[in-house]
Image 1 (tube, rainbow, N blue to C red):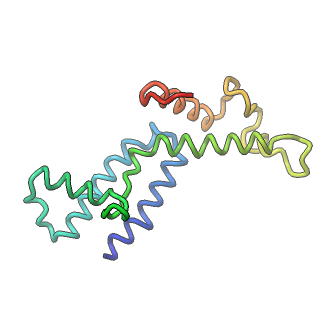
Image 2 (image 1 turned 60 degrees about the vertical axis):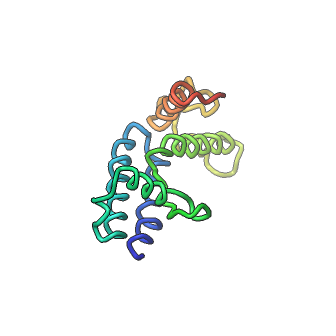
Image 3 (image 1 turned 45 degrees about the vertical axis):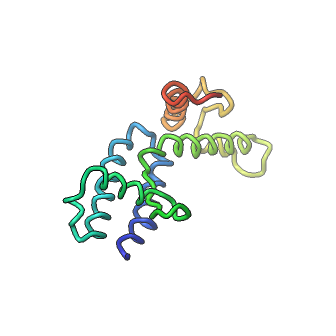
Length: 151
């Protein structure tokens, strides 16, 4: 049980943090392989290693149970590889929106947009050259093209 709690509350939350803050092409392959190792580790610990004799269907079922939320009878070990693209996009877009609202010189505070992304106009993506902003533009295009998202 301690292994499960360490996985869920420490490692899985750290992977979620990385997924939200690292552009998808840089991390998606690593997350996928690490997640497979995590599932294998949980099955080994939970079954004493006897899961290696299971059929493919039974292993797929066990992996599904590990991923389901608690309210649906699962263990809530969320695969970060599948949600990394949307997590990165949502968190970075929120940051850009926040910086756009806090980026004028009339404020008593520093112009946060100029501090975080000097020379970038937050309201005009065509002018973005900062690496995190260009990654956001690429992720936006990926979501529209490959996942059939809409504006």
